[in-house]
Image (cartoon, rainbow, N blue to C red; front, side):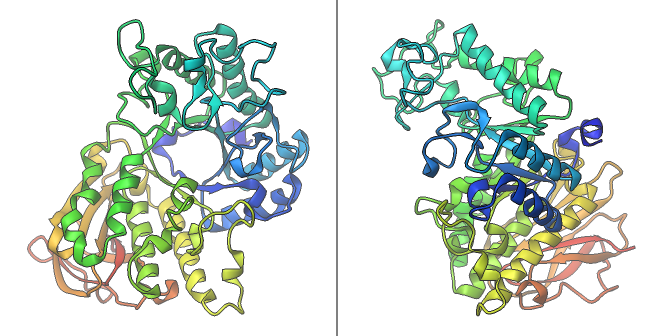
Length: 493
């Protein structure tokens, strides 16, 4: 039944809120079948539409998080059998949760019992030693120019979708595949036949993979982790694009995190880092990712990036998530960030679930953030304005984009019928009374739909205005803006 209806609505016109998980450490020690009893229920309760699994293909080195794949056609035996993994995917589908899986065609490790030197000579990797090795990871790269290698990889993408009913493939490190000079100095790479830096074989492979998956597996979405300005990542292959359905918006992620980590007094000098994403928001079909990459290797957990004391950090964390969920594009959040854990991700122990225990002194603080994420997802799914026109410029309008001195951002989202939602973020630590914003004349009154400063979430409880009092005068709405908070307003019914 799930597969029969999966393709009913194009993914870019549907709600798409992703919970990213490292399966072996989400709850340490659980098998696929045990995870099937717990993870789908949790993801459904939190309101996410999809779960994204860091690579589950067999890999020899656990701390690689699965990205050093040796056995492309085998789910890792650490958690059970292939049929156990099928059971897990089916449990997600029964709960109404789509399953996305990280897929790694960009490189493979040099273990001599795996693909490296498979028949004693370079087979899956190029014969040219300079081209064969990836300089960042000390691994081999695939020879995308060989028909047999392309077939191996394209068939593998289809295999996971057809045999395990995977709903999406997030393709890792696409940028490293597209450029022959990726992480290489001059003299360490050779141009293509046209003298350029593009890897034409990799481009042809990605186009073939996407076209084949979309043809054979209706409703499956492919997602590119691509960090450059390559043109047409999500353009169809018949128009010269790579053919992905969605692309991670690394620019938005980098700029917005750079802004939110600043002390509020300095944010006015970085205001454009929060608005610049709308300059290119409709050039591709985007996902806004706060992924595992942003909470490891000294980058700190999301709440720990924030400035100020513990209250201000949580307030910034909540306000940022409210801004993110309202911004055009789908969204992805890595495990542990939904309840504001303070420690970086570690595959050795997984999320810091103990922070939610009743006997922990700050359990209410963490539960408040978790409750906010649940409500963000619930309102998101119930508000077509937030997802129906993600790829349509007519679905967005700035209300206030130049209030740098106030650290305030305000914009409207519209659904297919023109019904709006107003999102306002005050990223300064002061209450702004009687703040005036332009709003559409056709809406006679507004109501607070969500406020990240609500006491239920651990906030101070500053409301935008009394119920029934949010009525525009002369085309302008006067609000009280809570400190370090995002508020959503909808037409009063």
